[in-house]
Image (cartoon, rainbow, N blue to C red):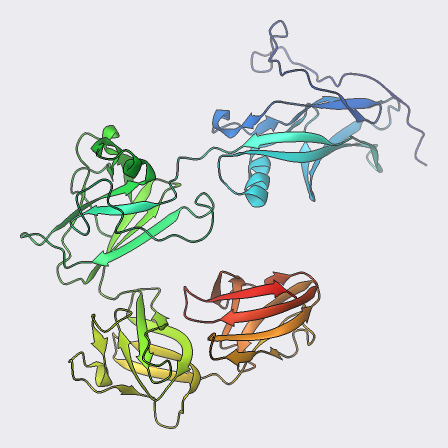
Length: 466
């Protein structure tokens, strides 16, 4: 039988050893501003000041999230006391003096707020548990209190640009921007750009540098331009290098590549790490399809996300079409047998396949075309009427170039799939669906659902409440 436990007010004390490592100078304690005490059984907790991760040493394991005046038991049998910190639906082990693991708090902030270095406020409670070795009892739950925390991160601009031979040697030039996802730049710090490699100088080289919003705003202050720490012109293709502003470098730190036969130069930035990678590419990321199925409008794309010349996309395809490097006729246009001659005949659908919606795969590397007819696209999952057993069909809207329907979901997950099978399916982020992506979460309700398969890198869906 659990004995009745009597509590009294007491400050929670720890046994201190006489070693230097454990000694605390109580004559000059670290003080936090006085805050209102919050009930914790017949003890209390109180808030601490802002937890700024910039002040936390790399080797530091724990961080104080509250001050504790804890209830104590008069029953000697229940001698083991533990504490839990609750933030939202998460629960973490807490020490007797109100500390939790730095890694736990950082992960909670990142998962729930993102990685931006902005002050965040979380509502928390603390629990006390005691045990006699056989039985564990929760003896108290505190009232709610606030934890304020701010992550540390380097400055990341909203925009980055290439200046130099590919555009202009002007710190304010913004004609060649890096692309970025729709996510916060601290949650997705990756920026990419690809430019034509034909802008070489007399030596066959391309020199360029990188700017951001600060550099643009600084007008002609070249010290704000970003260069490379490896030294002026010292780019190693395919390997990670490091960026810094010119005012931190000993030379200009401009980037130089010798493209040779390559058609494109790709630059990838990871601004959380302050790094760059330069690659030479022989194939561009997107080709555009113009043909009888879309009124020769260049408004369907196929993509090669690996830049290996193997492209894939989804569209209503007519019997005649061409593949184009630009969304007009002014670039390289591929006709029958991948001829780029100005009078090349149009490509045609393979024998036995008629006009309709399909997956188009084209390889510039092997000069082949594969067309897979798609007769139906639907939703499937535990959130749908048929569960995971069968697809609920969508209807193709040729004017809007999407598959759509009004659907009623229960709370759960679902995916899109084609031809009532799993060879072609989409999931993941609604704004950037991926083939074979994760299940999509949805709350119960009736929605207008529209899927825009487009091509890898452009696939998306909308789920709008009715």
